Image (tube, rainbow, N blue to C red; front, side):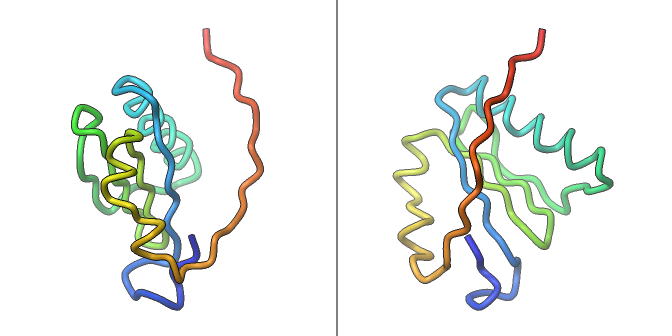
Amino acid sequence: MDMRKLTSFTDYFLICNGESEPQIKAISKNVQEKLNELGWKPDHLEGRSDTGWILLDYSDFVVHIFSPEKRGYYELERLWADAPRIAIAHQKVRAAG
């Protein structure tokens, strides 16, 4: 979501969900590892996989990783309905191992 015209605390929200606690944890770990490789470190981390929500704040963008239930509860897409959506192409990811 493009937040630049709506708020001063970040430029973008990336919102996704995992279907289970281990998947939420794995998404968070993978996002942090890949961004760390690019020299990005989060300014702030919040939440835990067992609560169904993790926030990774990289200042210019904020990554929200939800369980389906928490995503429905917080409804960020409805709360920030005026934010333009940015389409991201889906890529198939091969499991490690």
